[in-house]
Length: 399
Image (tube, rainbow, N blue to C red; front, side, top):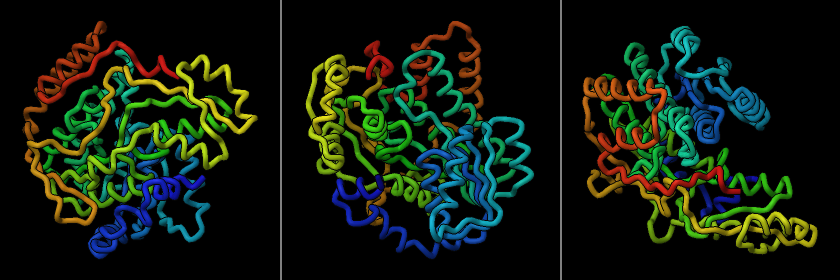
């Protein structure tokens, strides 16, 4: 299934949300990318690979992609080399490693200097709330590794540095969102040393690990679907996610945060409104069950053209019923671009203050008996708007 087409059709968009902005700013994008050297970290994921495809339109001279997912990198290469007419620079190489490893520093220096560095390597799921070990890994990836990368970039500064954020960073209620809000503050503080920008955007439909991708995988395996009845999200297609990140990276001025101009009334969509359309596309009619047990028991309905779906109300920790792109306290511009809003921010903390903040964090992470509440309290200390939703339940308990 062409997920980009499905998403645009479902959202009643005739073209990408950002098509006009890409055309209107094509000259600047071309001048900043054509013939330039580009590194993409976390480039095997849905958003990173979509960013790469968006950037390839402007013909960079060099592309270096780093990702811990070796299989994902393999598929990225196969995908790019299988698209008719796809531009790929002669100087194109991928590396399956972590961006905090000694090998990464060596390859960064060997391949550099880079004109553009874009980082998509992050924990993005609320699911990481499930236990302290997953939370530690999230914090290390979204903050500790990010700071190490920033320190490296200060030594070898690119013209553009972009690090992806999330709409969950606005008024966060989960540890993932709060960690990304802290990451935003971290990279903004480095704006005195290098040019930095980021983007908050919506749920990327059918991205790796997303609920909508989960629908497709359940159907592929003839397993029942599981869907919350009350969660609303903004949606962009994978293609659109790459485009907004590319424009935030290249067009964004220092310390700007881009977001899609979507309407809180019209564009927030329930997951529960999408699965019937998806099932219908594959020739099924949904049959609703109020327990996962009953949904599993009735999997034989698939042979009759009916599909079992377990519907439930959300009750897991850190789960917000709707998302937003900015807060009332933030200074944003909705006029500069056709479909993009821009937040201009001054850093809350200076780089030197983050040395102290991170010393506290390192001390926490060294504690063999670290608890989730201590991470929450540390985040609340520096992200006062963080209102953590704690129910004691995690997504690993759900189908």
